[in-house]
Image (cartoon, rainbow, N blue to C red; front, side, top):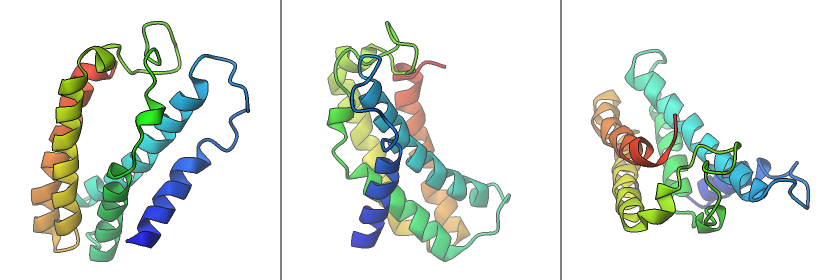
Amino acid sequence: MKQVIKIALCSAMIATVSVPAVAAEPFEDEIKARQGYYQVIKYNFGLLGAMVKGKKDYDAAMADTAAKNILAMSKLDNSLLWPKGSDNSKLDNTRAKPGIWENYPDVKEKSGNWKAAVETLAGEAGNGLDALKGSFGPVGKACKACHDDYKAK
C-alpha cells in the first residue's frame, strides 16, 4: 500500500513540475495541481471502466492496482488545491463552480460518499469481474453526484 501511495503522490506531483514559480493567473498552480490529481483518478477509473464494459479483458492484478491507486488518491488531503475564488465565475481555466464554496457541507458529504464507495471498490476490484462490476457503479454515481452540482460542462 505504501508503494501505491508513493506512486499516486508522484503522479499527482508530475502535473505541477512544469508550473512556473509565479503563476500568471490567479490560482493557476492550484488549478493545475487539482486537475492533475483528477487525471490520475480518471486514468485508473478508466482502466476499470474498460474492464466493466468488456472493452478490456478483466485482469485481477490490474483491477486491484487501479482501485488501490484511486483509494490512495482519496486519502490525500487536497484542500490546498481548492482556495476560495478558484472557480469558473472569473477564471477560464477551470470548470469548478462557485457553489463548491457556497455549499461546502454538501460537498463534504458527497466527498465522504465517494470515499466510502472507493473503499468498497478497492476491496472488491481484484476479486473477479462480477465483484468489480458490483463496486464500480457506486463510485461512478458518487462522482456524478458532485459533478452534476459543482462542475460545469
